[in-house]
Each structure stands twice: as C-alpha cells, then as structure tokens.
Image (tube, rainbow, N blue to C red):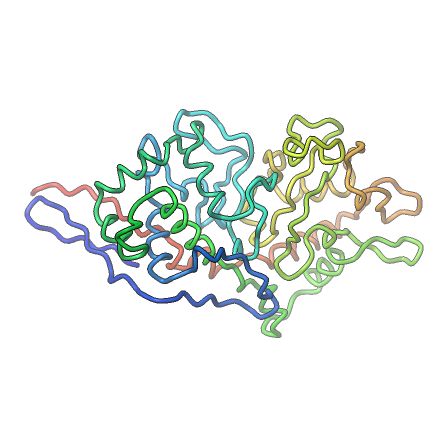
Length: 360
C-alpha cells in the first residue's frame, strides 16, 4: 500500500491505494511445513492484512500518540528495536527485550515466557500495559472511530455490525503479523541449491547441527537442540545457564515450578545478525559474546536444561569449549540467516507518511 498526498490549498488529505479483497494466499517454502496457527474465527484476508498493517504502525494506539507496534518491532531490525529494553509512554523501560516477529505464522507460544497462545492475545497486552503503549482498548476504539479512514476500513473488513472494537483491532493486527514471513536468506537459497556457502559457513553449519562427541572426535556446538529445523526454533523453553539465581524467573513466574525457573522461549535465529542485543534482557551486545557464553560460561543451577549438562568438546569437560575459529565459523553460518528481502519488503513497511505542509 502506498500512501499518497493530495494538496488542496493548505489542507492535506490522504488518499490510499484501493483495498484488496479476498482470501490471503501465504507463500513460503514447502520445508517450512503446514502446521500453521490461524484461529477459525480470524481467517486471513487481503483486506484484513491491509488494515492490520495500518494499525501496526498507527501511533494513535498509544496514550501519547507517539508509539506504535512498529516502534518496538522495526522492519530494518527484523522487527526488533535494537535495545535491551524498550521505552514506554511513561518513560519507563520494559522488563524484557523486544522479540522478533518473523515467522509467527507457525508459533503458538508468544512472549519470552509463552504467556499467550495466539497472536490475537499477544497484541492486546503491550497496547494496554501502562508502561508500554499505555492505552485501554476502549480509548483506542474511540480514537480510531474518529480518525479516517478507519471506520470505513473496519466495516469493509469485519462488517458494519462488528465495526471497530477491541476484538477486531487485535484480529487485524494479528492478520498482518502472520504475513511477516522470512524465507529467502542465503541459507534458504543453499537448501534450494541456489547458493554455494563458503568453507567457513559450512563448518559453522556442521558445528551448529552437531552434538559434541569427543570420544568419536566429533566437534559440535549443540545449537540445533534448541534451534533446530529450517525455521530455527522449536517452541521450547530453556534455562541456558545465564545465572545461578536469576532476577527473572521466565516461564517459572507462570508455573511456579522450581524446574522452570529462568526458562525462556528459544527464539528464532532468523536474521539473528540484525537483532542485537541478545537474550531476554539484552545482556550480550554481539554474537561473539553469545558464543563465549555458550562455550565457556554456562552457570549451573537446579533448573539448568539437560542439554547443557555435560555437553563438551573435551573428554570429561564441564563446558562446551569451542575454539576461536569454531566460534567464527558459527557466526559466519548465522549470518547466512539474514534475509535482505524480508527487511526491505514494501508489503511490511510503514504505510503512513507524516508530512508538514506550509502555505507558501
């Protein structure tokens, strides 16, 4: 959708492209699989995606009219924001780092602690959190009802009987978010036989997929145990040895189980080179620090996930103990996961153009 400016004297009017109508056709490689998550009561339509994209970048959804979903989920950064913690409408910081929205069509556990099982539920939480977008849904409904072209668009997407309400707002946003598919990285092209990786990248791929077996002289980084599969995530929650006793309990704050303390969702590694800083609290500034942690600084606790216990490239070792060249090779492979098409796709960009026009 392209937003055009029409000038009439000193008055600025906004003209949008025609709204497409009909079922939305998802396009992704067959190896991504068809185990997608689309609620029966919110089928994806072209008009719904059109509206959802507008709402995703709509600052009127926030109490100060300055923050949108796109503020903390920026396309150029694979829909993260490059910060350890995001700043809310009241100036306070969020408690966790902003997660990428890539390939949420296949995800049913949202947030670092998995508290939401659908994008519809996820969208409503930051919108109404007083320290994030800070606006109750009824206020958002009132503001959108008075702002063109939303009344007409909601009627077109959901019918006049439904119109603008809290449910239709989050349904539209969820429809757009499901279209954010990243599937054209060099890694994808390699799997399709269209890209030839370097020797270093292939070494990194092997280390990524291998579990270390020093008795058999097999070196590995064990990454695929948490980030396996072509989409590089498995909807699993792990304590990855960041702390012996952490300040944030992760999913343990929901389950109250001792074995869940410090467990967080293993995020997708798609576009990982663009989404620094890393971990739920953004403690690692770059991928070198991430590899150093997994190689040599896993902290033991009762909740530490089993895959980190005893995993070592040294016989009787207690840490993974990767070599310097192996870390570089893994990072070279991870850089293959950057999808330039995804971060420049105009279908995912901000459709709103802010302009100040003076009468000359």
